[in-house]
Image 1 (tube, helix red, strand yellow):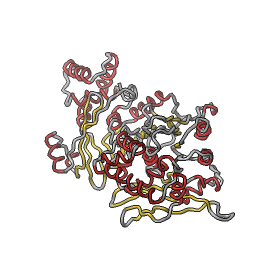
Image 2 (cartoon, rainbow, N blue to C red):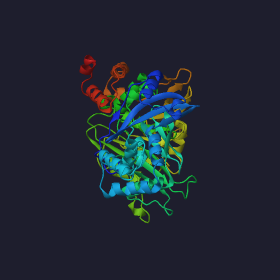
Image 3 (cartoon, helix red, strand yellow):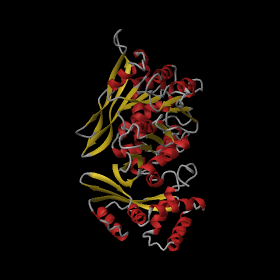
Length: 523
């Protein structure tokens, strides 16, 4: 059984070994007898193990000549074992494992041992060979290993007989030593297509779907990609990032986090701010949206609308809606994001979160913001707040500029290079307010701006939303700022004590919303 057969019930365990120093890693690798020249070269960055059901494999991360490599040492043993067998023997083993109904690792290992004696074969690394046949008995084959590594965000098959790439949370883009031949790549893609009940062939050479666990899959056939069929799996994170993680990464600081908490929540729900998160591809827009969604009032009714279900909001009253693409020859089967937003407005939502705004749904989202649904948010591809406004007011979105006054803040986040590493940073937070005169329907004020020299966000403008929320809540500006400092204390406590899990952070936020004084006393 593979991942896709049992994806909803499989319990995957990642065993993490805290071997942070290079000398300890090398000592451990020596003890593990990983003496191949392949692994002795370069700088060892990380070592840990990944468990896929009954089997455990080592993962080695190393850096050599500027490139990062994700090495599975077991593959070298597997290749040595396979090279000792003819194709006929390999095919016979595959057939008999299926015919005999062997599903566990021990069953397969015992079978291969008996097979070796029966045919008088000298097979090296029988345990590794058993792991290989155990993995390929599932739908993802060797990809079962990276798909079960919770430290990975994406897995990329670039064609036939080429190294598979992965995107690691810590080490970013890595080349692996997984190389899949033509038959294996095609087999995996066909298995996924069958699972999601979608065609992929010469007539329909592209597949975009998501797996039952929420992971997004994009595949192409050799008809449109020169290196052969491709496969990209964007994993659904079992352990989503929280605001504490973003503070650790330097994406934002405690002051900005406290401001955004207060704004998204709306000072105990008095005036939640409508926000739009913008940035380029891979800038972390959806991650930031998920982080900010935790600041919603704990008792609100929230509706999320996405193409791929990525948002993970631990609140009790959440409805998750997803689009449905058209099927070949069945255009009426399609349910668009715009359809879902219009329907959501009839479901008495307190807030609507939209995964990604691309077209006419932008108008519907702004309608929601203009009709009393405060606290709505979404993401948009744009390289600045100015560009975001231009996109919103141009085809195909065509949002009248006057409607943008319901939008309080545009948060611009980008992926940038610092000290040779790719990092994500909030570059600006811009407030949208009503402008003066006939030709100035909106005005923009930059509240926070990124300082590259200091690698920090700096407050540079006066916020009109603060004045509005003070008036609605009946408090002074001093009280608002004092409350923000208290929120900063809570976040600082979580940061210092490394309290970063989704449920833990959400619990502290809820405690503050219910009884801030009591929570502050307990810190």
